[in-house]
Length: 250
Image (tube, rainbow, N blue to C red; front, side, top):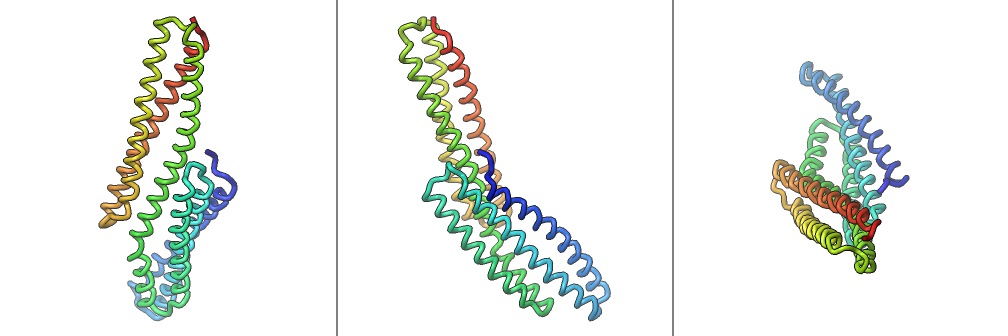
């Protein structure tokens, strides 16, 4: 499903904020290195200023990405109303957290203040990342749900055509088509089973004990998403063969 204008705009803003963050982080590193080396009042002042700019831009970057995800969740038709409300509510809470964090950054007056403020975000970062990755999985599930719904309708249509013309189809061809439809049905079952696994694995992301555990669990989710997509792709290709066979009845 193509991304509509709202999320496109949000994504462009995210890219813009990312470019700014890279620059602000580079400036911060230069200023920090100078302060560590010279430890003068001037280098301290420059480092503090660069740190505040970097922390502020980090909040803006994360904020922009969460807004992008919020729009994607709102636009993705395959996400249920209940899940849409749930995940947009989670994103709203995270956006509110970042806005509070931005207020703290603006009140920084010392290097110690900057360290404390940064640590507050960093201590929350795993929760934020788990939420982000769960929502990425939900968006992928929504995309597949739209395709699967359309595919299921096409399967039903093909079965109806087959049933209506069964009397004019040769026994050999009827057996072949029946076999193909059964193979499609088997792959549909495998697909649905994989979707259930993805839902369970995505929900489990929030129970991750640390960043490494989160990365490992998210890799599993992505692998299962790839497997589900392959089942769906194979089924669509198989249905194309059935459709071709039904074009000519013997």
